[in-house]
Image 1 (tube, rainbow, N blue to C red):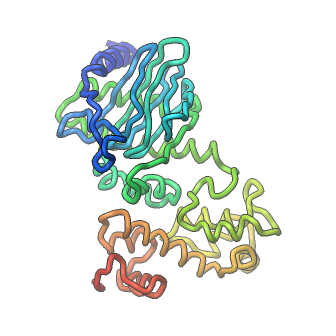
Image 2: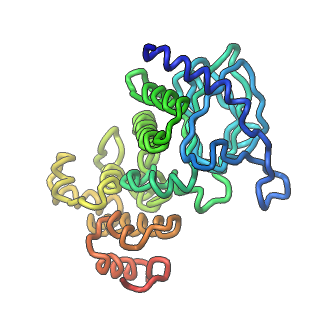
Image 3: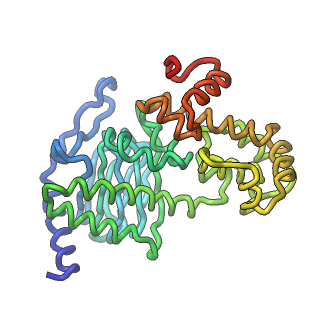
Length: 343
């Protein structure tokens, strides 16, 4: 059997399974019946699953999912209700739609002809436990994926075009074949593939949105006050016409553990003293104050929305010493992370 034959067989098999899943709408607790949702479609011992819809029409009720999901328009276009029951979006062939747990969503129809949708689903706790550490270096991704732990309902989603040169489609095809022919070790294979998929989709989303208003690459909630100062300030601009402070914030957010003024200045083509002056002019903070703010806001996010140990949080925001992190956190916020005592 050729690879193409194996893929076609796997797509057919998963498409045949699709209507056999439990499609019972269940009331979302605490909503008095106003919100309904789907539970996990996979087996109890599965943490990642792959599903395939193939058809010319589907009319789901607007609902919530209790898991992370990525739906890819593999062949043809499809429509979906996104975020609100009255917001109909079209996902064109080659585009990916990614949603958080409890994101409002409903597949409604294909656009004029049969379509094939490949979906990858990841259990929420699996994502937080195993997928979160690799994305911690990316502030925008971190904010997106941690949102559901704070909000009862998520309005966050990603709708991104996947270029033909991207390995996303081939990666999805590998996952389709593996899941359709499940073996005892399939979950161990599917989980790293799903993580790679998440990161590849994020890469394309960043490339598609780079240079738009605000901090398109690193989210707006972690340091919106700093961004507001820089975005409206006159003076020299950085990458793609953005204020230098925004470029610095992005760079620092992606490398909280190893960032230095000298290395960053060299990378951006500035003298360290000049870059420091620009940062202070645009943000009102010194470079070290800006780094501290970004580290502390990231630490607070992790403390509030994850169950990571304080030692792990410290390492992830650039502190090799838990004691030093504890003192910095106490000095910045006036209280300890989660009210813990010093380790």
